[in-house]
Length: 129
View 1: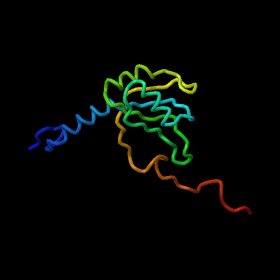
View 2: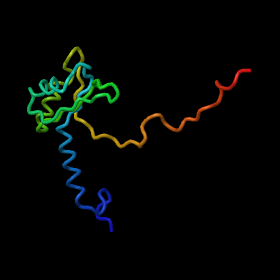
View 3: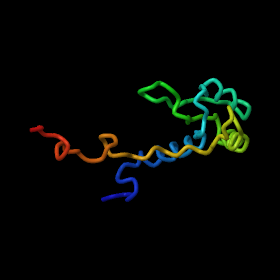
View 4: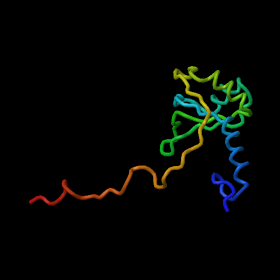
C-alpha cells in the first residue's frame, strides 16, 4: 500500500523536502560577475543587506579563474529579498549584476558533455601513392 504517491511509503521525506525549499529561499544566485570578483568583495557587497552565512564563487577547474557567477546564502529569507531588491541590476566592476533566488541544480545524465560516442576514420587519412 502506498501512503502518498508523491513521497512513497516513507514519511520521512516530506519534512526534508520542506526544509530544502525553505533553505533555498535564503540562497541567491549572482550572475554577470566580473572575472576580477572575489568571495570577499561579494561578501562585503551583500553584507549591507544582512548577515551573509556563505559565499561561493564558482571557479573554472582547468584555469582556476572565476566563471562569472556565484552563490550567496543569507541568514533569512527577508534578508535575501532585501539583497535581491538592492543588488539586482546594480553595477559592480562595470557589470550589471543579475541576482535572484537560486534554483536547485537539475539532475543531469552522467558522463559529461560531447553527446554520443564518436567514431574515428573515414576520409582524410590513408596512404599517398
